[in-house]
Length: 290
Image (tube, rainbow, N blue to C red; front, side, top):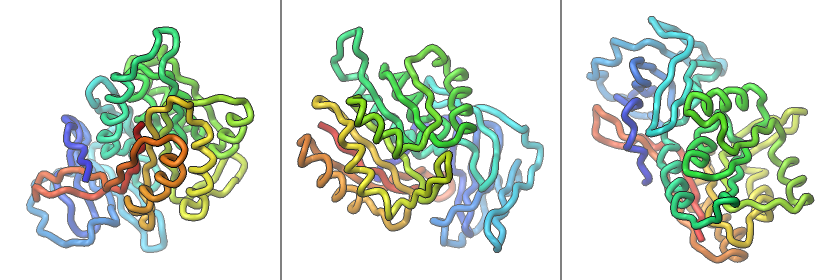
């Protein structure tokens, strides 16, 4: 398992009864987590000091209950700063487990030898609030950030400003990812690195439906057409239960290695839990590297 264990301002304090207890900077949140199917004693003092608790409804969805929690606040990871706020369906605007992937591709970008006038080009699809975009830009890449939500792209730009990356070579695009990729293929544009973090289910700006299990294979085949002949990496993240690491590995070997050589690794990603000393699983990632 790849573990995101270099955070200073974020921490999973405990996990029990379908919920995780997290510290986000100075504030403690309790949020539901379907992976937490065990019931262990709530011994950690943080359970009694929470600033926010997302209660899931039996009918679907849920709502927040707040205890002295500001509308917005920030936390940092190395040189990056992220603005946080609790919003619908339990999210805060950041997936901390992805830091383990930021470090992986950032190292590749740092080590890549490119002319000063031609930075490594990275495409970030389903880019959300820009964690991967900012990590790639901070490492020296020129990034194209694509997400179907105007609000998320705006939030990502705020994170870029907070991280001192307002002037970094980032293109911010509100677009349906599939249609954008199809246009880029026709334009002849190519990328040295591709990151994709597709949702299990989603809709594009004009109501286009995305279902991970039904669409991911054909989309991987499509997106690989955007890899440059000297491409260095490709990353796929999955929070969909049926897409285990071995499935990601199989698809990436078929779609990428046959054309570009290199090698694929895939594994679960996770976060350490303070109370138990164990690791909370948080999805899976597949990585291709030349």
